[in-house]
Amino acid sequence: MATEIITREDLEAFGEKLIGQMKSLLSGGSTEGEPRKWIKSYQVKNLLKISSNTLQTLRDNGTIPFTKIGGILYYSIEDIQKVLRGEVQSKRIRLAR
Image 1 (cartoon, one colour):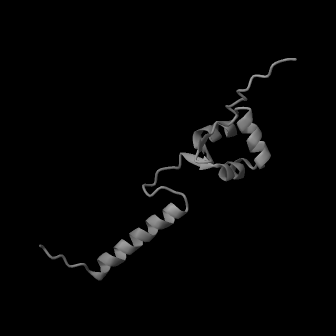
Image 2 (cartoon, rainbow, N blue to C red; image 1 turned 120 degrees about the vertical axis):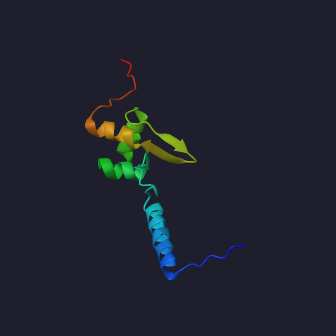
Image 3 (tube, rainbow, N blue to C red; image 1 turned 60 degrees about the vertical axis):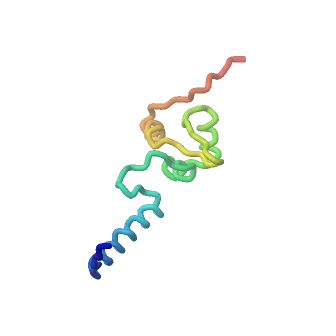
């Protein structure tokens, strides 16, 4: 079995890298620097500056598509950007009475 010597500098570099990765994970970012693809309801509300009821209405009328996993709603960042650019319209068809 080969023996390797680990220096203090090696440990410090490892610690800094580990802390950086943990901070990134805790802040919701990716460790590889990739942009986030999905966001949660509270993030959508903050981004669009809307209430919970308005977000519910946008979901109900099909303006903002969502995915529900384990009781948590996720929204595609691309779909939210389309809403911000005004490229998405309601997908619900209203019948005349």
